[in-house]
Image (tube, rainbow, N blue to C red; front, side):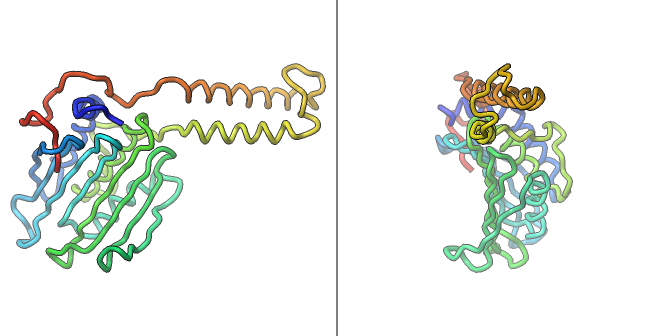
Length: 267
């Protein structure tokens, strides 16, 4: 999805996502320290941790990575309670047409739940929540926001910032102070299919089968106008779908320096 670490870093910077992630982490309760780590050519990322642990044997620790190939933004953390994770996930579900689909996974340790949500037609959210091995009252969990196409990256990343903000601040209605609310991307292929199916149904009707444009055989001028508008809408959707679309900042540019080391980040 992104050709190089440079293009991914530039996309995260220009879209304001880096700023959104840092702003959420700086508002965390309890307070977290944040640092970057650069070891892997496939990821940009951060790690965060609790310097002064409230639970002595279970300080909060976690990571945020963005995958170069898929554009997925993945948050992992150990040390938060289950209710805080569920509040973060509910923040995503409240903005979606459907809720989370949950299932136990037999391949994982007892007590783990896996969930899938589609907050927009071009973004999938996946999560796994399990009991931490460090303390029975906290969870070890992860959340991935996965875009289906480059143009859906900003929506996926912004949703991830929102969920992260709820998790680390313990504010169920958290809204980023530096990012706009995410706008779901349009699934043009699905829209084209829907409009085409409607037109196919009309074309099979004896009254509409051969009538086009201003043909006097239209049963009614108003009905004719509706069908012509549908055809125009279908053609417009096809034009948009076929036009070049790019993820934010995917052009090749010089590296802006997201960390001290000269290569890629991994958490």
